[in-house]
Length: 168
Image (tube, rainbow, N blue to C red):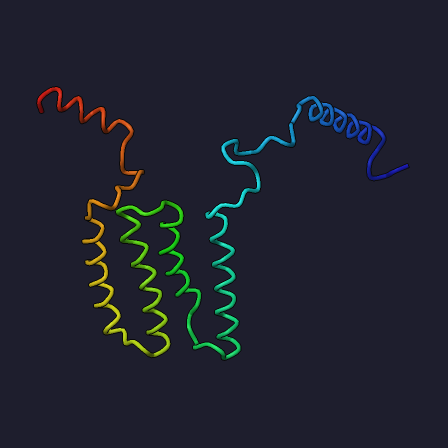
């Protein structure tokens, strides 16, 4: 006889397991139904592609630096800047916000590599970034670049037409 589990405890455990099993078997779960119905399971899209690519590039840069084949560069910082530039454009496309943020961080990443490899002094890097920010903000003002969808309210056209009808 088991001294750790008296017969009454074992019997109660078996009863609980049977109850749980019965509850689970009475709730049909279709294994083929996707968790997110708008997207089939395991579909590859550009959002799931970015992280593996960034990890591979960071690893290759880190390995090349460790082997002495590439300049000693802080790859995590530099590629983090590049990812901060690519991510908005990949996730949201080209609009007035991403056209300013994306290229800014991509060029900041490039300037970071130049500074860390001794080809650019920080006294030149910072003014270049300020000038770049101004130029990108001017470009973003262009009427050819669309407004981000998240800034456009679904009721905005209705409220504008109501305001125009009231003569305001």
